[in-house]
Structures are given as structure tokens and as C-alpha cells.
Image (tube, rainbow, N blue to C red; front, side):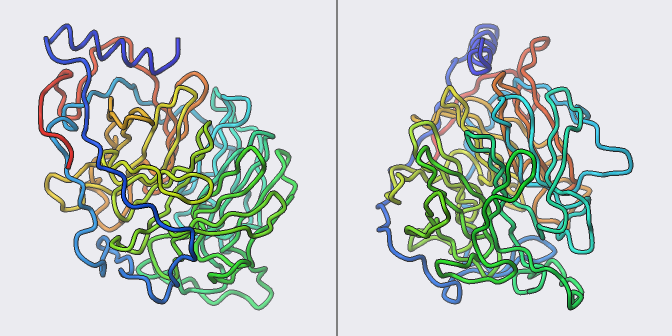
Length: 427
């Protein structure tokens, strides 16, 4: 039986035990006016500001506007956590990662991590792209000296591995608040601001973008966060992140990397940074975009028309949709001095209705009390295997975790209470 059915049985059983409603429904805002498929605003005109060491600063107003309802607080967590399911090669340590996906076999796990550190791979010569079996055995790695800052990973239907390389290793422009890297040696091979396609064996098959050089035209990216492909092989790149330069556009290319079109991932009244932190394509071909900067998930057709938006899945930074159209939204940023705002964790719900059915809180806290200086914690990346096991990747501290449906105890919410509770609807 698939995971979502297991979860529903658990929810129903719990509701019967405590005499409370089975379904928890969060209100869905009406879709915003669809943006035209026009060029994204230039980075120089983008609103917002840099990322400070004490959190996020310089933005226009409070962009974390989604507030937790009583219904959201009552969502149960039916999953058990395993943070030690995998084994790294001897002498090798996992770095920060927002990039995780499932192999085409439906069970092996791919991750792109930052060469054992938290940010750039500069000065390291290890392979940042790694594959693990379902039982946690290290299988292979590749990509050394080719990638500056791995951020997104996608496994296409043929098993090819796509990686977005976020930041340049020769240009400090995007390093606001993170500390500049030392001037690179003159013979440094440029990397960053690019999208790379590898065969399953690690052979480079395609490169899009100009390595190390930011830009907003057809041959440059400004911090590409994530990538997916459709059934025809067309490529969709979420081009933008949380510091300038950031294009905040979805750029579409054909299967050979020829530019086709682009559309803005920020609406006119949005905070104009971090509008496309993750991207996912569902089985109907719709393009889901994690608009982290504005606390939404925006869903487009393949021509860039906005179909609907959800604001009840937290401050989404990572996305996955399973074969049953269950939507998983990873939130690694909420809960920074926002009172009743959403807290960090994974919201799980229905892709079509937007009804949220479960919430897995960040096991490290929201925010992690030992980590006051970093803007993100965990989870940032999320993926789900064919058996319904949830995998997350984390930036601070680095790591992967696996969540499996718990059959031994009654599911509880983040306050430790059984399922249920009535509250207001999301605004």
C-alpha cells in the first residue's frame, strides 16, 4: 500500500481515537493574475536586499507574511526520523546541500553537496555529486573541479543527472553577507552560474550558461537554483536566488540548450528576490515553483501562464510531487522572529486541492537554537522514493535524513498532542 494511503489510515485511526475530524483543510487563496511571458526584470532593478549574518535584511517589509493557523498547528506527524541511514566513504564528510533527488530506479538517492563545506567548493577537489543505495551504501561520485556551488539536482527519465551551479568562483558579487572568498589563482577554471547535464556515469553531456559569469540574457544566468525537463526534453531553469544579482525568472530551453523563452517568477507586488528557489514538473507537465521569498508555491503551464498558487505550505524552498500527486514542501527558513508565522519543516498535502494533511517539524528546531547566525537550517531539499520514504537534505548543519511512516505510535502534532483541533482558515 502506498505511503499516502498509510498516512490517511493513520490520520483516520487517530481521529477515531480522540473523536476529532479526520481531514484538516487549509484555505487556498485565489490564483493571482497570470503574468505575461515577458522578460524578467533586470537584476539592477530588483527590490530587496542582501542576506545578513543575523538573518535576512534589507528586504522591503515583512516578506514572511504567511501565518500559521490553528489548523496548521494541529497537523499530525506520522513519520519516524532516521539521520544515520547512510554511510559516507572513509575520510569523506557530507557538506551542505539543498540538492537531493531519487534515481530513475525509484529508490536510490542522488545528492549534490558542497564538497564537505557549507558554501563554495573552491579549493576542494572532491566529487560533489554522490549516489547512495536505498540501504545507505555509497555507490559513486563525480563532478570534481567542475562545480563551484551545487544547489539543485534533477534526475530525468533517462537517468541523466542535472545540476545547477549557483555561484561563481571568480566573481564575489552574490556573496552578500556570506563572506567573500579569497582572490582565486589566475589559472582557476571558471565555474558557477551554469547548468550541467551528466550521464549516470558522470560524463558531461551539456552545459548551459557561461561558467563563472553572471548575466540576464540568453547565454547567462544569475544564480540558477534548480532545473527540470519535460517529456519533450525541454529544459526549465529556475534562475534566481536570495541575493543580487538575481534574475528571478524561469528560463526555457530546448533539449539541446537553445534558448526558447522566459517568464518572471515574481509578480509585480512581490519581494523581487528568491522567487524561484526550487522547481518541479508533475506528471501532467505543470511547472511548480517554490517562491520562497514570498511564502508561496506558484504553478504554471509550460508557456509561463500562472494557473494557481498555494500559501499554506510554509516558506517553500524545496519541492517534490509523488506518483499519487501528494505535494511535499520543504521549509528551512520560517520561524525567524515571526511570532505565529510558519515554522520549519515539511508540509504534505494534495497537489490539486491544496489541502494540507501532515507536517514534519524540523528535528533541529525552528530556528535551531544553537545556530543563531545562519538564515537556513533544515530541511531545504526534499525527495520521496517509490515506497513513500521521504529524504531531506540540509544546509546547516550538513546532512541527509530519511523519514518513514511510523506504525508503532499514534501520530501527534508538533506540540506532542494527538491529531485534531479546529481553527481558522489560512488567509
